[in-house]
Image (cartoon, rainbow, N blue to C red):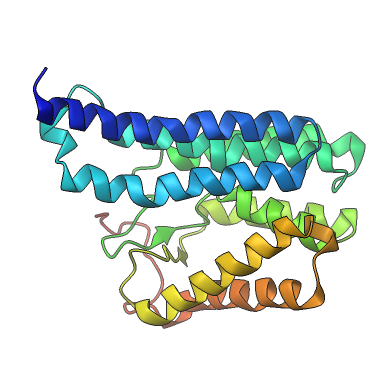
Amino acid sequence: MTSSRLIGLSVHLFTASGAALGLIALFLAADGRFAAMFAWLGAALVVDAIDGTLARHFRVTETAPFIDGVALDLVVDFLNYVVTPLVALWRSGLLDAALAAPVCAAVCACSALYFADRRMKTADYWFRGFPSLWNIVVFYLLVLRPPAAASLTLVLVTAAFMFVPVAFVHPLRVQRLRPVTLVVTVIWGAAAIAAVAQNLAAASFTVKAALVLTGCYFLALPLFREGGAIAKGEDDG
């Protein structure tokens, strides 16, 4: 085996390690240990943040072309962004006990459709519709702990937005206001780490306020997207 092929396989293995981290997080979610779950999901997020750069740098499509990096990334993301947080939502008590399982099952099915949608990203790297980041949604719910009715409403509305042609930002790839977005992302990350360290719902007012304000920034950012709303027939990148 040539050194370049070995490096390409190593990059794919690094991506696949995100699934191992996600499985540990899934076990913790099923056990109701949500702060620990998010710590492991955070480690998987670090892998997800840098594996694409490594794949491009080491040209894995040329050095290890028999592994589909895109498919591998989607498999790992579906576990970490959808399945594991939905297990946490099911176990959390945030939803009415009679509704928790069917709601989570429906959201999982809808998210599978979203992940298979070829129009998921636009040419300028925005997401079309809510990008199935249920790890973020469940994280906010566990930190803020709204009433069951409010949690259900948020989950259903967010699920519906997976199929609405509006833009959601990719904080690392969208060029519009990118310097500001990167700073806000760092602030959000620091607040999220603090919330996990403080056991989520027990987090301080300052931490919760930082999470809410930075979350509002990401939700408002599409209003400043050049080109306006996403048309259903818009080509992807």
